[in-house]
Length: 321
Image 1: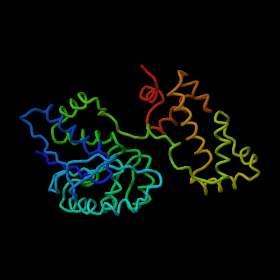
Image 2 (image 1 turned 90 degrees about the vertical axis):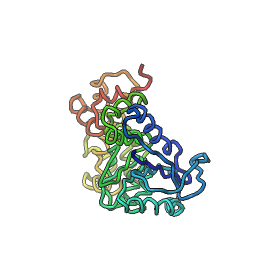
Image 3 (image 1 turned 45 degrees about the vertical axis):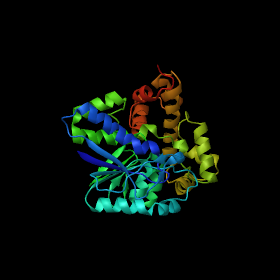
């Protein structure tokens, strides 16, 4: 029996507390009684725990487990992260103690912030929800954050992307403990995708904090309004009465990128919207965002999203039958 403990704490997402145990339960049924199963417990250093939304959780005291799963929590705008982590000192101590004993630690979504506070991500590769990857990198500069990855394991520490990535991790665990057939069958029974490798196609740049100030934002607006036009740095600089050198320097200082890099990202963002919501051909969408050569556009799109335009449409087309 593989002993799996889920660390419950105040404000954790209840679905992330039960998601992994539920999939492991299904895997045990698929594997059958003659195969080693899973002993799952919800544990906490506290006697009472209320999860997100005030949901009361029945918890057991801390115990030794082979795998400790740390769920995420509601990381709302304006949250005082320092105060939040300080309030979870008992849980962070438990995470640190568990890792020190040589056992596996896993975080789901922004549970990675608790692992970072426990010192487990230093000099390790890690991931988290793409929306909060930059914040995790700022808080833990010694970590190698891979925001494109769904699951990252580095020397006994596993981190995952947002929410449903708990199932990607659980399927990996099932594959290692019960075999590929059981993992594959469990995924089919649960209607869980067992072939995801990147969270890049899900990224919506509009939800990320917008860098820059008034100058760069004015440049961005002009580029956004002329997505189909040929990129002309000299004309762009002239429109703002600055030299090309000044334009590049000011834009880079404020945003950390070049106007051309921003334009390419904006074109891909527009193309994603058209692929999701229209029946236009890939060639027509390519032309609409400034690329006469559909092959060049497809290569750029794949570089930014991790998949080709037709594959993206198949996965994300809204209202598709």
